[in-house]
Length: 117
Image (cartoon, rainbow, N blue to C red; front, side, top):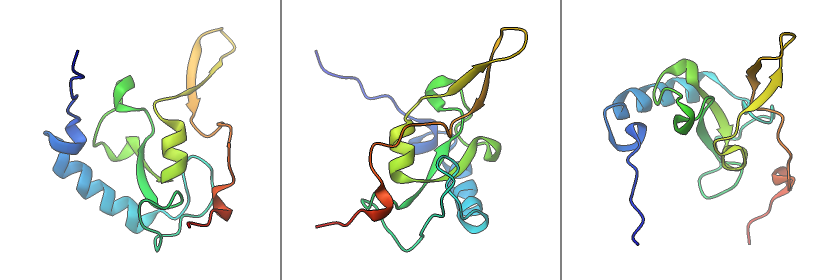
């Protein structure tokens, strides 16, 4: 059975132009990873794990808007990759689950000291 490719509206669909415009705004105004809270070095380029990228705070796969600037944040590539489509949830006083953050993630490697071969 062949895998079907899912088109993402922020990659090749109706939201592509808005996503690119907001990506430029974020790159021009933010300097800290929204996931780990550490500075982002814009001189690093993909595939370096600490290179800058754009993270969807509420993942598109979980119903997040693909190009709304309020749903986008600056991130390190490795942090964004590790976060994937996870959301951190906690119980409120009334026992209802409430999405509060995506920063509380375990770090498997200190990518700040990464050295490419």
